[in-house]
Image (tube, rainbow, N blue to C red; front, side):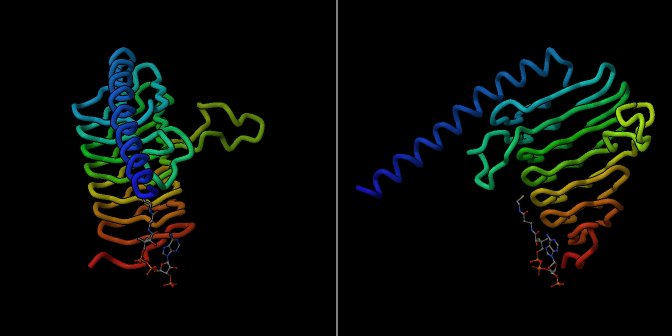
Length: 204
Ligand SMILES: CC(C)(COP(=O)(O)OP(=O)(O)OC[C@H]1O[C@@H](n2cnc3c(N)ncnc32)[C@H](O)[C@@H]1OP(=O)(O)O)[C@@H](O)C(=O)NCCC(=O)NCCS
């Protein structure tokens, strides 16, 4: 009896996930088309992400990426929706093919570029600016905020709850351990972790 209930509940969960993906994807494609966000084919959404596109900025997402914004769709437990936002004319968010995100925030005032097959762990943040200025009397003045491009190479895996800060380049295949704060460039093929994030060793 107990086994049957587990099987039934698991089947219901799978079905719910499929239905959620279907509807979320349908509506997100529709809204993105109206809003000028460029989506390639085959992208999957579990619940709608939050997308804010500043006029004359670019948000481009490559084929077969996956955006999970629903608590059940990744059992690590993303605690918020994915959020993509640009904050200046000419700002760019460019995401390659087959990348995956759960409850991830990406914010660009200049440029955030991700290669292909980049995995970004639950609740991580990637941002090319500080969101406030250094001026104590003018924290919200966008003209005073410093933005430096962020570039993340192909096959990079960023663990859960990481923060990737402005000006950082991460070389291809590198792993960033959970909870890391990346303030400086990381080379390719490295395993890195910590706050501030440092190289632990190179991939064998
Ligand atoms: C980075 C990671 C892959 C390294 O795994 P590993 O090679 O087995 O590393 P080890 O456990 O052997 O640890 C090696 C050293 O790095 C340190 N380290 C590992 N992960 C760390 C982290 N996230 N933050 C700080 N230090 C870390 C260890 O303390 C250890 O230090 P020591 O040599 O001084 O004892 C793994 O720790 C990790 O963070 N995985 C991400 C998991 C995750 O977020 N999954 C979400 C799914 S997207």
